[in-house]
Length: 146
Image (cartoon, rainbow, N blue to C red; front, side, top):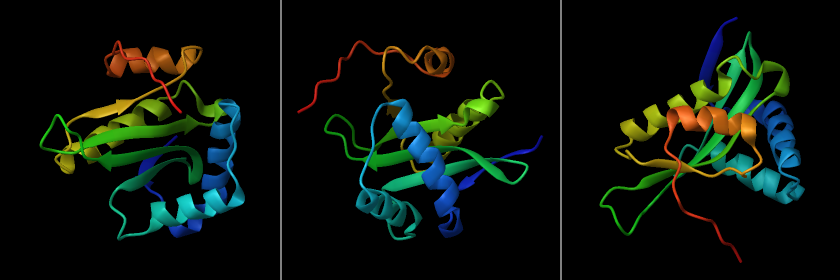
């Protein structure tokens, strides 16, 4: 099967919403329809260079997405890249989709002059952590939120 990683396009709305909904469900989360609309609009806006999305396609069918954001960092001159959401449909897992999406983010960040890419996952996400342990370094930081 041919895997293509490409930027999100305006005509991807249905496939993107399906995949992002599955991702949010996996994490026991949801967002309002207004947030779906706003997020999609930001991701496909060519003037918005901060928020980005790539789509993984197998044989012309969207099977995965990755959202990533660029932001300033007080300890660096250059921006950093936060890989916020990564999801591949369960029926295609183990075929390198997640790795291909992450490597595409690495390439985009490098092209942007943003060498640092970071992400978070929940400790129980064992399958994803197998991949993350191969292509990234685990940090000692613990996340708090308000």
